[in-house]
Structures are given as structure tokens and as C-alpha cells.
Image (cartoon, rainbow, N blue to C red; front, top):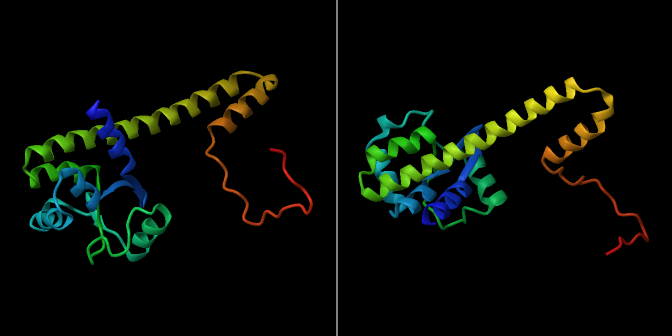
Length: 173
């Protein structure tokens, strides 16, 4: 049960930044049960282990976006430095830098979360491909069924910011 909870916690800490699935240094430090400062000191002592495709530092704009859009970073609650983020390979490399038993166990769980996320994304692509094949195979009488399935698979649409209310109209409850 503890593994399941940890996987769910980890999955919520994986973000998409610059087209990469990443985890924040502060979230990783929390999982490893070390301070963010000590975590980053260990990384800084081993920077040659973290090339740009393993780890990068957020820009000011990315930091502000995370702070305001997701509410995960509270102003003043974190270091004066911009956060570092680690891609899957960077997280894997952390096990050679942080040599505690806890770090190894947490890394295993994080790798499982990344694999699970990748499998989910691949299965969604596979489902879309199979649906397309079926759509080509059957004639127009099933078009409405395929359209309905595609609508169910699509992410929810953002509300139109230009949408205006109709005066005097009250929706039913």
C-alpha cells in the first residue's frame, strides 16, 4: 500500500517543461528527506554527471509560471536560486550522487512512476491508432459512433474567454 501511495505522490510531482517530463529539485529533496540546499550541494559537487539532457535550471518565466499556474512554489518559501529540474535520466543519475538507502528506494519508485506515465501515453496513442484503422475499415454508418468516441478521448476544451452571458437567461439547476 505504501508503494501505491508513493507512486501517486510522485506522479503528481512530474511536470512537462520545455517538452520534457521533469521533477523539481525541491520535490526530489522532499522525497529523499534532505533539505533542498543539501540536495543541490550534492548535485553541484557532481555537475559533470548531469548534462543538459539530464537536468536544467528553470528560467525566471518558467519559475513564475509554475508558481502562479500550479501554486506549487510559494514566494519566499524556497531558495533565492532558480530551481533545477531533472529529467528521468537525471533522476536515475541521482542514485550515484545520493548514496543513502532511502535515495536508492525512492529512485526505484520514481523510475516506476516515469515508466507508468510513458506506458499510459503510449497506450493512448495506440488506442487512437486502432480507432483510426477501424474508422477506415467501416463505412459512413459508423461515423457518428467514431466521432463520439473521439470527443470522449479529447481533453476538455478551455472556456471561451469572450463568452458573454445572455441577459435575463438563468440556467436550470
